Image (tube, rainbow, N blue to C red; front, side, top):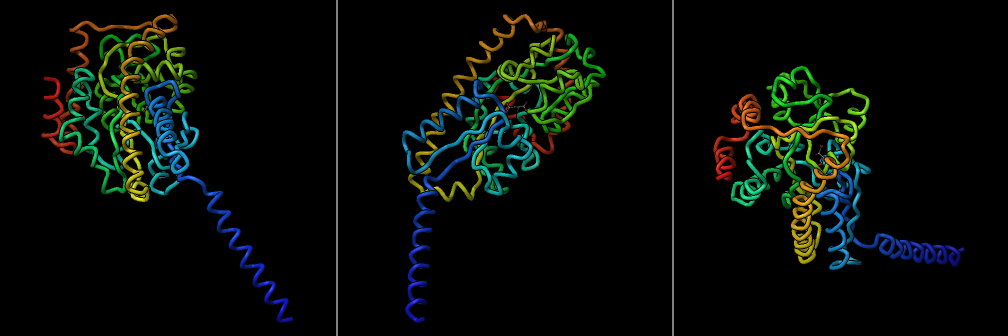
Length: 332
Ligand code: LMR
């Protein structure tokens, strides 16, 4: 009887030892799930894939990156919540999608604030840019860097040359109150919808238009269901790469430095892709002849500026006047 008990105990101990080591083996390397909503042939898609490759090269066996494109894992409206719960470790939402966590990043949505991407780059690399990168800290999120996509264009079912042309139309926007105010300023109706729904909304004519970059309009085929694109360059679509503080601090320090360096290199690569795609994808849309591209002369463009620019003042309190002034000065 006693002997049987002892054998059972020994067997149980051996079994649990096996389970523990088994778990360690099955657990394998630390995994960074990187979730995003765009296609792989975009600046963000290419950046994420590059990051995955660099980490595999440098930390293979210890840390691996798994990339989930096309809203496969989370849409942008859920991803930050999921990150704080530990269900995903990295993402790069558009700067327009952080307003539940900070109002400061709304600055990047102000219409006609940045003249070109050089101004954006200058501002993001300034002390104010760093301050904004740190604006999510209190919420448990760490901003690891900015990534460019580019300036937004207006696509629509009708030609848009002057603001009055947008009167009464419905536009999909990202989840940003500044973008809502921007469309209200031209008497249009803004609708906050996830990126994954935009194509169908346009195709079924549930909405009339949307605003996005050339690479998003091309890679998600919006140009096939939008007969007109106004080359307005009226606003910015850039990203912040974020992780949770809890996860970031759980990565051993030396490895963390390698992950960060890999990310910085991937961002530099993604920025080159962004620049190239803003020209190439535009050209592909022109060549497709599916969509007519409308360019604005100075007088027409000034009309858009005039009606949309009062939005700056509306959000000045939340964003900070000093911040807006600094961003504006980056154009000089
Ligand atoms: C959008 O929702 O239009 C964009 O933020 C998508 C993206 O991530 O580029």
